[in-house]
Length: 297
Image (cartoon, rainbow, N blue to C red):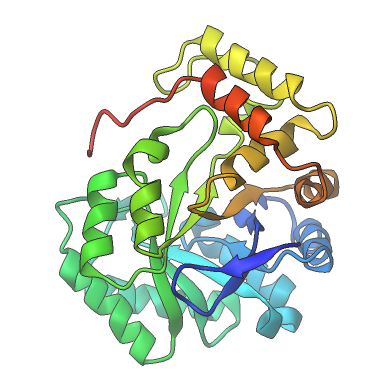
């Protein structure tokens, strides 16, 4: 595994990170995959208080407690589950964040969170108040660093200008090239780490039947998947798709949801697969047109 600093923080994360939302099975099933990931050098595990109404955090806490001091634990806040458990409401207020972190700490079986992320964000939010909450939690030692999870360029720019975020988790893939135009250069210039999600585009780039995706027609999606397949002679389709995102110099790590040991081995295997050549990268970029954000620019 190759490791690099996350933005301006002193956190070093592997190029492949574990997205825990996919761990919806039993505790033992999760433990088997998570511990194998640790064996393979994965050190960054990403969850959220929203996933499984908190049960995902609890699962992660139970499985990784013996290795806590060697790992980077990241979770998210901002989606407040309703009292009846049916749905949630957006809440970026300071009071809620300070309350929610206590529950996350308890479920994760830890006294600090390495990276605490705002799980979304709008321009209507009380951004300064949100930032104040994160800064207070840093002072209290309950979190080490904070970031946001967002695909909105407007929101990302505001946090870059008005906060000390060290990371942005954002959707990016060969089929969703919007960040290439809107945010990746900005984040690199400001030394904010980029954690990529959605690198295989819901599986459309690797094994799912083609369908319309974002502003792309079914035909475009099929052509992109065929191009990935064409370039996967010495690696798997999944590995080629992941390596496309990792080829961008702004990207720190790609966060991948993995349910099985087989998926885990394949994903981590991208680090030992043949890297994309300049010619291959050019073929991918020319073969799949750039797309652009229509909203929140």
